[in-house]
Image 1 (cartoon, rainbow, N blue to C red):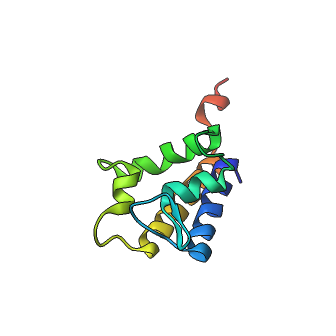
Image 2 (cartoon, rainbow, N blue to C red; image 1 turned 30 degrees about the horizontal axis):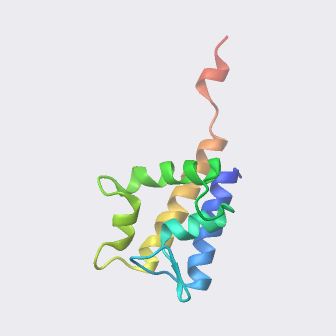
Length: 107
């Protein structure tokens, strides 16, 4: 399992346990998706780890055309949808790790 998929799964657990919110990165009642990913990646306020940036890139593929923060904050969005998306992206990353790389099999 890659560091990226582990970070995403850790963020999903954090949202499930600590709570999910909208319109803020973190509050006493929980985290938004971006806030949970940042915490799961071990980022300090104002810093960005490579894993954090890579996870955002993988998730953005699914939230387009909306930026992740707007997808999270969309009226009607649910905690269940956010956590499901995180698990979907983590599973895709894990599956990609298991797939043989066609470039590496060139003679």
